[in-house]
Length: 404
Image (cartoon, rainbow, N blue to C red):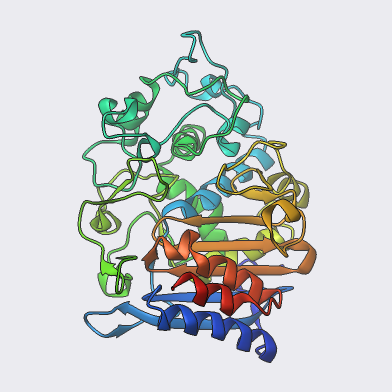
């Protein structure tokens, strides 16, 4: 993939792979676990499987298309993290730079009240001590009281004001001592703005999406007709996501206040961690470029650093066997994870119903964007698809059993 303007090449579809993946998708649709989505699989830079499945809008009978746009939620994170790494590769930013060197006004205190030393690496690895409002135990948590936005709502504030509110809340732990999913990439977005002197949307376009030809990807869209309608898993079938509906991805947390109209709101602040819109093809273009060593976008050593487990045994508590790199989770122990993926595989997802993984050892880049939360992010479909890619005969059985 040396030409950044070209997507992954299209190869003849892999028949056995297609049969396995189709079986998983068909089972998910039949069980009414998914409403719609787009699945793309590339091997060594060639697309060997592609399918638009189900409906982009079920009630209107609008079929899913390969060029359908999705609210990317946390798939924004690897895009914005890559933008930061381009700045690092150009020596305009250092991974171990103190954050206050570039954002002197952002000074949240450590739990003991003392000044905290947050670095760029801490932000990229979610070891900064920051948190998320949606992960608080109830609606009266510290971030909620401070009026912090997680970047999923239509909060009438600027990125600068949101950072001020985030900084007013003490950190959960001293930076570098623990792992906690957080608003770190929103802070990273503000850092990118400061270093480049550009609004985040322009900076990301200049650093990443423009050079890669990711024409569908930005922080909002004006084409509502291409935007997938979001749904929430329910019985007997997913229901249409309501405006300002609160849905928790994890037991014991208050949950996300979804405002889908944010994707059409040009005035909404650019949330580096959750605010982007894009297509499955664009996401694959970025991931496969990184898998292939970065092309003209990043030097290979920068990509290798992104894909290195930076956090040891620290990592997402719901993903045993995973650590974290610079922008995404990294598989350190396939046995603990119960995964057929190679050690070092990259993985993450998005709250609107997305998952992706890159297995550089096998030359694989897999993108599955759906419009059904949270099945497409963390439901049985995710592991069943993974197992089908690797040839797991039990993939369809696992998915169907989960629907009983």
